[in-house]
Image 1 (tube, rainbow, N blue to C red):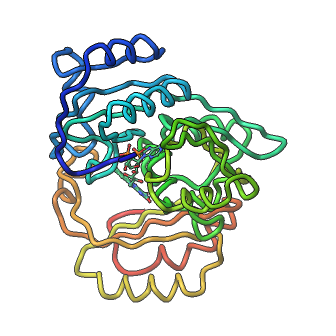
Image 2: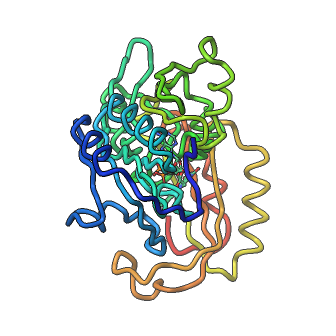
Length: 306
Ligand SMILES: Cc1cc2nc3c(=O)[nH]c(=O)nc-3n(C[C@H](O)[C@H](O)[C@H](O)COP(=O)(O)OP(=O)(O)OC[C@H]3O[C@@H](n4cnc5c(N)ncnc54)[C@H](O)[C@@H]3O)c2cc1C
């Protein structure tokens, strides 16, 4: 089965088979003439402009199995869409079928086991809201609107990774629909080769319909620091930041970036559109400890703000 391809393969699809497929799923099958089509084929990167033959908006594992079986029987390629944040636009394709999982938003937290199960349409901010009810977290994305699915399958590097690793390091198990339409569980003991592959190998090994994550205690208050300096301070700030990160405890995850301030009304007019150097840091532990651990970084060079 082709999970995603950049090659344009428009197909002549069997109308009866499409009607049978559409009638067999709880979700919706969208075709190029439907009013929802343009919205449904759009992804986060607005430069991506692809035209699938069909988009299947799945509502559960059974719909995903039906989509995989339909595509295999009709010999059409599949693209899989979690939340469509992949910048290369791999969640959509020209021709063939997009299996859109963005409506699959189930989340279940087990606070006593410190685990959470989530479906592939969930975004990081949505998972955080549910796990934070118990003061628990799994290492996720820096932007709360990115999808958990594509992120975890590709590794997933966020602002808790020095303490608890990448998102894929915290994936305990997954429910996967394979190319022949079977539903299997992948974990350290079940299909361990598949489990190895989906932890960083991207979305090429089947369609993941449930993710089970390890949770850790953190929050609801977390110490974070963002310091923005004029770009003239870059050499001093980056040298100081490098020295700081060499000795920082594992609770500290910090990144430095050369950036241009957005021309946004969220910032004072004198800062807008200026080149800057910034550090962005999270402390995975008690807030007071974080303040002490990150103080040296906050004192580096002239700055705009903290
Ligand atoms: C604003 C923004 C911030 C970001 N921040 C970070 C960050 O902090 N750290 C980081 O590591 N990355 C970051 N990324 C990259 C992000 O992790 C990827 O774009 C990721 O693919 C998003 O997940 P998604 O479910 O939306 O992916 P999609 O675009 O839907 O899919 C991406 C790929 O995964 C496959 N896929 C998706 N779901 C499944 C599934 N259930 N089963 C099998 N294959 C699937 C798709 O076929 C496609 O090939 C960011 C991206 C954006 C746009």
